[in-house]
Image (cartoon, rainbow, N blue to C red):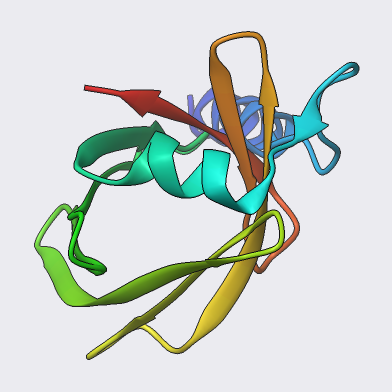
Length: 122
């Protein structure tokens, strides 16, 4: 019985590792002009679902401040646009600029770790 449990643990673990986020933007995705990206985000809230099941809620206020929630973690800070990147600096989250691209109606953000995630408008 313990062999079966051990085998099951290996299968479940290998399946979890097999699920990884993409590290490249989708084909035909394009960088947005700074003014367009600013307009796209300002005053809106987006969610992100990571491959591990974690989800984010990211609210971009028009005044340049954001609110971020993920599980029991939350932060607030300033956001801005530089070229085709979303730049943010929270009270807890370090300063970062992340490239954003659009494919059709979908927005994609490249995280600091290299993963590309989809921002879904609420």
